[in-house]
Length: 510
Image 1: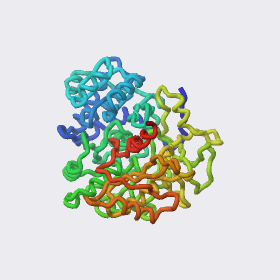
Image 2: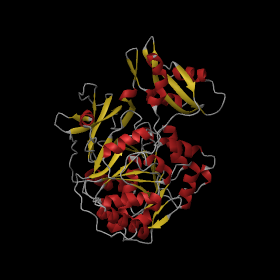
Image 3: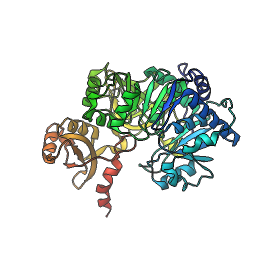
Image 4: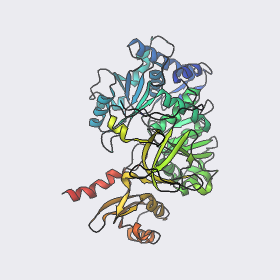
């Protein structure tokens, strides 16, 4: 298969997750390891179950090279299963329960899993995926009872660690291969944010998302505490933060928006919080400022891809004049800007962002052509991953994001970046949420349309358009504003622009 090659570097000392887990589970057995709606497990309990799961899997013949799929919401048993699969030397395939059943069938057939674990909530769907064996998480303790307690399987850096599927909202889902080298390097990097044995980190996004795993796995590997939410709810999030003295969390922008708007936010004791991380989409500057003012602890915005390659980090408190950026390139990474023909552009130019770094996927499973499309080779012969995002670096080295390449609006021959228009609209006091999309235009080919979720009832859409257009360039102006009750989002908070565009473009095909 086509493979992408990550750069080597002395800062990426390998960490074997299984052996790290076996070490920390014995270190402080009475300490809480995992908390969810039904469980509060100590490290003795959590470590014992994960080890017995590994033993049962090994006894079934599961080991290096095998893949185990899971279709379930977040829970303590799911976390124990994740650790157990890795200790058995196998690869975890966390299936996205947000995908349609037909898409899940494609993913399951593609991944080649030998066993499927599921929760009661998704058991009916799981039974239709064609697995040879389906096992319920709710009975996993009894299932693993009496299993041997083996030593962790010694893995190689190229062995598959996990296989993360896209949700299928933008076409055929792709299985992103993370090997042990990829995850090992994240396990080294993330404790720089305090995600270590002293962390009490809350998981409020699904375990099938790399967003969640980036913050969860280092805490497990170092013996910290995880507070797991089956589904995000603002009031529950605030209650859990206060009750369990949460210190860390990786959230997405829409979660920050909803948390900060909660009428009782300021009544909760959140003084235990040390670090908040944000990813999946840029945080609006005014929202960052509000979080820094009212929510204790530091805030870091992290930009990257599930495929790996490039990571940038914005230390928001330390850079108050750069809140409209996603920060600087992280240590061990490199970024460049290229044009549509793949030629490198000079500093300060707008173009597609490509990156390389320690954590880089091997490629897409069973999809050499897609892997090749994701690859940009530098004049030096180095592999970079194409992000598909448009942006530029300013004179201080901070990255300014614009749009996905495919979301750029071309109107009358001019390139229009929706992010620029959205930034202006968010500044209007009547706008709670916004997305700008391209719709067909007889005169211009495409034209920008603003979809606005208003703060209150009775908002005048035309007045918002007039206000925004007065601040935009002549070629950027919005053709109209439409008011919406909400905007469709993925499980990790990304606005589904393809879904928003579809009704307008389908009319042109009629």
